Image (cartoon, rainbow, N blue to C red; front, top):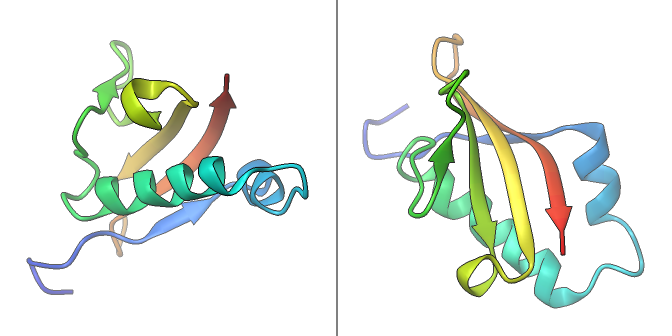
Length: 93
């Protein structure tokens, strides 16, 4: 992997199921995908993301303008053979 490439994202089964829900609006779906891209490119340190005080690898990023749609939680797995991020939970408002 080139140093200029972002890290891939994996989804937990819970998040994967959410993205397949018929009631999920395009706005929310798009915000979730946008968040993964924005976090992936700087290798987990996306703009507006915040870290857990007890576990810095666990981070949150707002969804939508100023977090108006909710928050996505993810984990940075930097020490894996192939570093990546895991989108663990999406909390919608």
